[in-house]
Length: 129
Image (cartoon, rainbow, N blue to C red; front, side, top):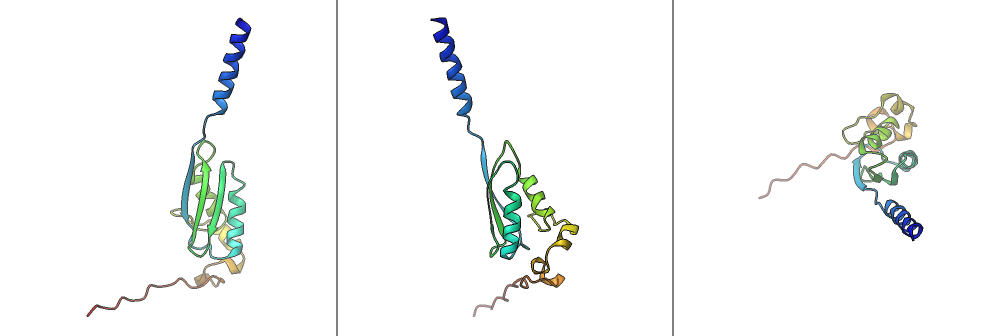
């Protein structure tokens, strides 16, 4: 009888510990100089290597990166730092200068002679009459 009770307690504890849900957060990170398919591939492949990153998608038309990650394994600052170390701005973390210099010319900013399009400037608003 004691063995049966002990066995049920052990099984109950094992089932309870495996049922713990790890906190998963979603975040959108502004990556304004990631504007082509090559940038998208470079960033996504590196983010997927981080332990705890569940999902990474770069929308280069909008200049933002969406991520889902497990808070027990990584944090948003590590994700932003990884993007910056690749040579791209990530919200408030500026790109690593040496990494930016190593990017292909097609992935550099327009003002640096790169292939990215010149940033759009908003049209002046017309006064209403």
